[in-house]
Length: 131
Image 1 (cartoon, one colour):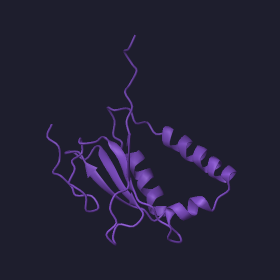
Image 2 (tube, one colour):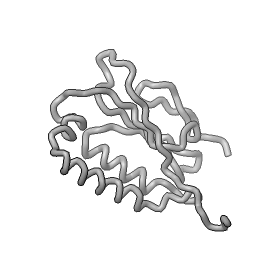
Image 3 (cartoon, helix red, strand yellow):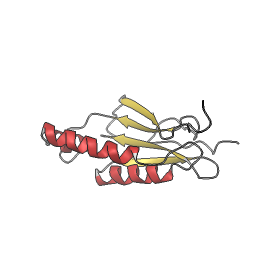
């Protein structure tokens, strides 16, 4: 199967679904009031831990076996990002049944360069039929 046409994400080099099969975040430092980073730092350690556990429980509850679509998970992550003021770009496969997701956290202008890229797979390999 041929991958979809390349998509430029937040001014970065074009990518195709299949170049990565992942949720990828390009992170940049931000000290702006109301930024995602600011919201996290205002919570106590116990509140951050509770929110982290709650989010992880929700994420691992999605059925993301590789033979199935990952769209419910991607929609959840997109909504989570949106609630925190984070823009995201989908890079779908040819038939739209699966997609990668790119998000940028922090400033995307003012000549800022660099940052940290995080990548994670959104699917798991089935165990049926393995001895």
